[in-house]
Amino acid sequence: MACLQALLFLSLFLYGALRVPAEVCLIPQIDGQLVEKLGQRLLPWMDQISPEHLNPSIYVGLRLSSRQAGAKEDLYLHSLKLNYQQCLLGSPSSDDNSDCQIKPSMGQLALYLLALRANCEFIGGRKGDRLVSQLKRFLEDEKKAIGHNHEGHPHTSYYQYSLSILALCVHQKRVHDSVVGKLLYVVEHDHHLQQSHFSVDTEAMAGLTFTCLERFNFNPNLRPRITMAIGTVREKILKAQTPEGYFGNVYSTPLALQLLMASPMHGVELGTACLKARAALLASLQDGAFQNALMISQLLPILNHKTYMDLIFPDCQAPRVMLVPAVADPLVYHIPEVISVTLKVSSVLPSYKQTIFVLAGSSLEDILKMAQELGGFTYETQASLSGPYLTSVLGKTVGDREFWQLLRAPDTPLLQGIADYRPQNGETIELRLVSW
Image 1 (tube, rainbow, N blue to C red):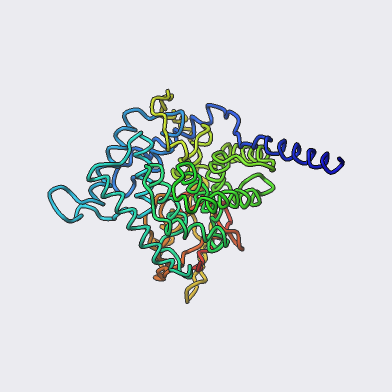
Image 2: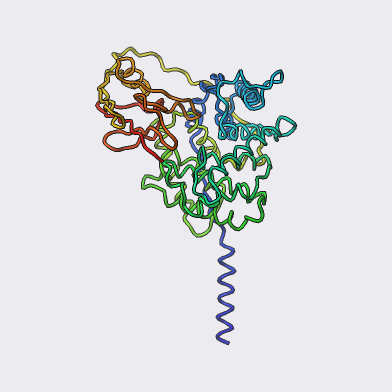
């Protein structure tokens, strides 16, 4: 009898445990004026519709927010379509892409597909099928680069690899088990992802990808592994929360929150962690941390309780408030302050060290330009969706799996790129060639 009672108690306990609701990541309402100002920062970027400046992420971020840019938004999507179809499919009158200076990368094509879905468009037809085939070819090439034994590396990154699968998923396009399997392997074995300085971003993007695959029940043979991988990624992200509240750092937190909002979980204080992250983001917003268009486009959705999972079935009829350009502050005459910043490069011989005098508020890119004008210093950059990044310094071009790291002396990595970071008076900035 005692044994029967014990079994009954255990059954009731397990039944109750199974009925415990999963804790969700909720971001309470944010001050509307703060969200408005954030959206206003994207408006000037939407005026830049030349191919090198077009950024599909800007369009996705706005569509997943309660703000809209009206006709400017429509023109931006039209410009995206013209550029991407011309560059990736060629013009109707020729078989080459001679008018396209830089062909979009795998990640850019993936973001373009997300932008189409944000406008409630399912990619289809002859042109659409060719774009899907192009992205699948990118993924197959990356899969081959990783290799059968997972000893290689993708030509781009696991972030772009995940993003590409996600873009196909929201359009309800399947990819082969072997492609998904490569991403599962790195999550299961903690392989490569942690080598990146932005590993939380990569983990979050992988988690969002797996969440989409799980919701559509794609790759059913891998479903147990996919479900397990989602939990693994969530746990890693929660463990990466800093005392200030960020998941990794301030700029990786928006994507991390997207994943946590999209996938409730049992047995953890998820709500507390998300509230702490919200408070940290608000403090950063008030300090003006978010100026980069790509970072803003990832933050806007969560401030409006949206994630990339909402692109599966987007609500294109939801009312959105029209964004009005910010009113410029009245000009106040003041004498500009001149500051000194020391630029240091030790990764080449002979090494370089020079103090540069610039106006306060100058970006690191402004300082590099000034150093080049003064002589004895050269650099080259390449455009990307997150801004220009260094490809060469003092004649030294980055090799395979190398990059020029930006540091504030003595060894603090900068979280912003050369166009966004604004050094303070007396700082020493080092450009260091590192491998990954």
